[in-house]
Length: 527
Image 1 (cartoon, helix red, strand yellow):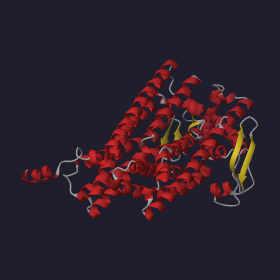
Image 2 (cartoon, one colour):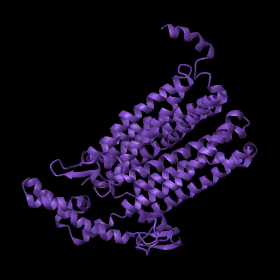
Image 3 (tube, one colour):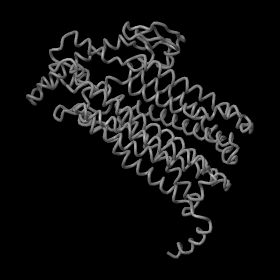
Image 4 (tube, one colour):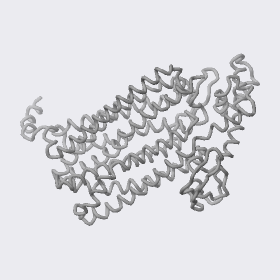
């Protein structure tokens, strides 16, 4: 057994790097499409102010993208450093989307970002606009493949365990690609990124308007962000409902923990708006419920019950016993590959093998586990409820606040008087952190709610870590913390410097002058 402290510190390190990296990703997703929209208006109208908007927000996009790439590459190395058995056990499935993301989406994105910045004055308007839309497409394709990989961890499909290689292997890549959990995560995540981009543009525009600077750029940017943000925030709620439905179908324990639903309720289940979960007594000390709402969200029906935590623990205990049978059959197969009876037994129970591995926390010879150890292992499938319960409500509350915020912004935008609403502009400025808080809460729910699994139902987290010494993980954790703190300071300083310069001062250094373009054109044609 690996030292539990090493496992927990490895989890902490990955959580630190992943959640830090995801500070950059949603802004990249949101800004890329807003920049494409702004340049589209420039090409259609020919008004120079839209070109200036495209370039200004493009600079902020480029700073954010560079930081996101650096932190993302470092994060992926941890699969080999801190989670080596995970990489061995499920690398055949998990590695494929990551490789495709790197070879197709990331290089597409990076190539067109280069053309976006250096193509002004060298490409025609339509050609450059095409580059900008392809840049936005590449950004979203990067997110797609990463979320397909993560979605497989939440709901492993299209793969089986091979007793000969002792690892999971792909048997249906299309099932991995069209995993319903992955698809729900993708659309929900990118729409949250669009909200982040809209809030960012609106907040900076509000800052300019409050300072009485760059009015032409700020007013138009505010209007674009208001419309784009309202549509995106509404889609987040709709697509979040789809994620809740997918969780009820494929991750019932996570959903039950989010709702602090200890006992199975009669359909349709109530939604607990406020409560005090008690993990020790397996009940809520206090709860305020909205009748029928949870049943409608999670099952989209009035007659389908949602299983509670304790019922799911009983199911887990049954699967652990099935995992013991699979583990025993696997040992017999490894001793004699021609043991037909053992192979038949393994084929019947291999899907419970991961649950059987939960017993490894208590004893090495899991075939001789006591009923008490089996009960303890089954209870381990319950994540800590209170953090999930409250984090979800913070995320949902911020989501509904942002809908109201964008609705007011869109109303003022339609009336063309938002620049006079100084109180609302101040609210817009202080709303800047809200989407990031909501998104980080969402990732916490997704990953913490999956525990104790690295891959849900397949590989326990404590079984997936590398056998590092405690001092090694402490040193790398301290190193990553220091490095990422420095990167955060650099990011903030670069962003603030670009914002202080504003669109008028930042543009001359980004493109060739008109005179130099005209002078270069004949030589270029001759060459």
